[in-house]
Length: 260
Image 1: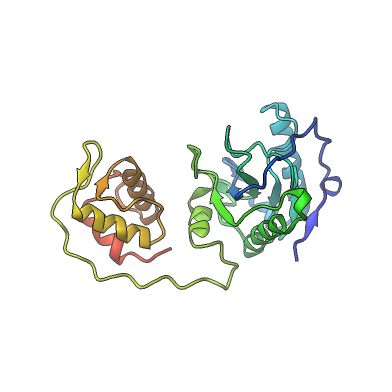
Image 2: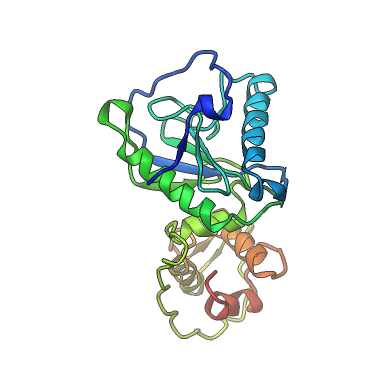
């Protein structure tokens, strides 16, 4: 059961107007704070409320938005703080992207508190289920759960949360076992890079394996910009050399490194 904290209970300012959604959103996008979050909020819920107020103040006074940009905020204590709420256009997904998805922010950041607590993960799932289940006139959302970076040039919601999203947003203790990897094919003996465009069946084999691991990319045999960005993200996740190219170490990691 979702534990909603109404705007009056967390001390939200009144909105300076709102824009109602005209169509049902496809789902939600998950965000984090692109800044430091003090770990103390995980011990003191009162600090979560202060953080929510500071985010709203920044959005209204610096971004010059009419309200907090998120549909809801989720804190480390499984509390879902109501922001703009269902049926209202969010502002945090990026220009031209707000009508497609609600925006939920997890109270973790780039430093300090960077790994969500189990209760926060439960709260994120609770918030998604809440927005899917609101009455029809309040615009329930569809089934998509994406990261802010899906469609917008940003690191948000960070590698930890984005990996959790790619794994299907499991509740703690309910991980879905990954499919066993196919035996590793021999290293093809060349480096995939872009530019120039690298093409071939060996590229297709690597793309297919990466897609099976959960990375979103086309399996077309062409190592272009999309494949390069997946390679970079994978290298960052696995502690490999951050080149955006696929060499022997990267090829082997695609089959041998654990899916995390």
